[in-house]
Image 1 (cartoon, rainbow, N blue to C red):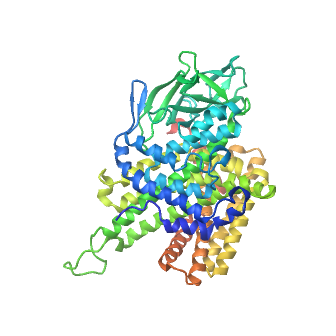
Image 2: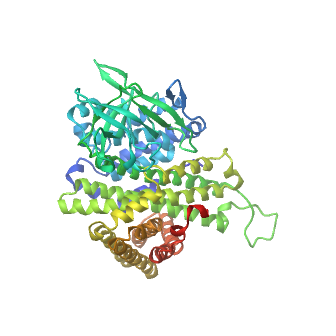
Image 3: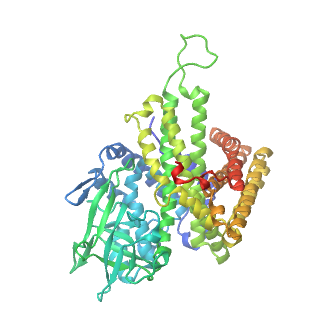
Length: 597
């Protein structure tokens, strides 16, 4: 049985039955599109994922990129894969025609990307990062940068990446020490080092552009003194590319996601690294957040995709692997049954389904808010969507990483002893998944961002929007005939989330910021389980409406109802534990001293 990577029927269900993505075509930005163009784009991504990316995954995982003589050599298959990804229009799919793009809604493009990341996440990473780097230059760069850099990035002749992290600073961007010295030639001379830079060097294209955070000489300390630069590995002079004093100082040997290299970079060893300012001086963090937030949604969808491909592999295995007999079977001569007939295997598969399909729904909803924030017809609608997008982004990044890892563990468990071997793929996807809770801001950072900024911003306006959407889903579910107990569970959990936020916000207002943030990870967990419960109740309502109308396939909709029931009765109860930890301020690790460990 071939692995479908994602369920086509589920993608169709989310796009057209749950989110009603066709309504996006009423907006000026998307009037050239319709369901036909959406489906064509998705079909191209599916073919590429299933016929090209997935068959290359195992070989790329087994043979990581090599650093030889200061240059990185990728797996040879990437030279065949990358041009096909570019020809599919992935580098500029969501961008306007003026820059060569298709103006595809992110809602559609992100689901297309999910297929590709499920097929081979590392291979997709090159185009995902390149697209985000080009968009930074499109948004903030000079006309010269757009002509010389952005055009080549969107066209696929060059690739791009983001260079934020430094060895001594990690996630603390306030401590960036890479320096930029202005010159009379309009460029800056850059000196410093970066680490964990994905795709920063390779043999796919002629050049790589590093979107780099650095501090201009004389700039103030901290976040406010950081600027954004475009630094190519090679620079154009006299119509030809020459080395730009950017050197690969080392390669990081990774647990997973091996197809794309993670590198240590050195800028300006010879004092001749040219960088060009992108946007305003000392506004680098504000500018870079555009790329970081895009990357967080991409990482979230990557986490869902990695859980999805493993779930479908486990499902196929469970349906074809004979072992044992039913609990009441007494005749050992009777044939064995497929392990999917065992209740505990169905438990593991249902939890995977609930995580995967709840997560995809959450990510598609987040992408829809991004589309509305950028393109809704009126300013209030754009503002509402932007607030909601800010709230959902750390959740959409973290839920697939944390719960997705659990899902990958279950896929491995379904395979039993075979799952622990490299002859089967679940162990590789498990390795890949772990990165998603670390890069683009660890789960801990997402919790701090959610509670410390997003949830309490503008007096909790974004949480008010979430409550409105939950109430709308509850009303729809009741109207469709969903069990009242399901609706009550979500209603009570949503109320608890709002009350906990008010309680913690009051602590912060009183000056106890450390107390407010002590359980930010638990607050993130609370928000995750409630938000995904909202997604599941909404899906259940739509499924029940379809069944009431006699629409087929009945099995698909019945599966939705079972997964929704599972989440609301098995996962959502965790919300109260998270809420109690936040309310009580349980302080064991606050009082724990380093010597006591």
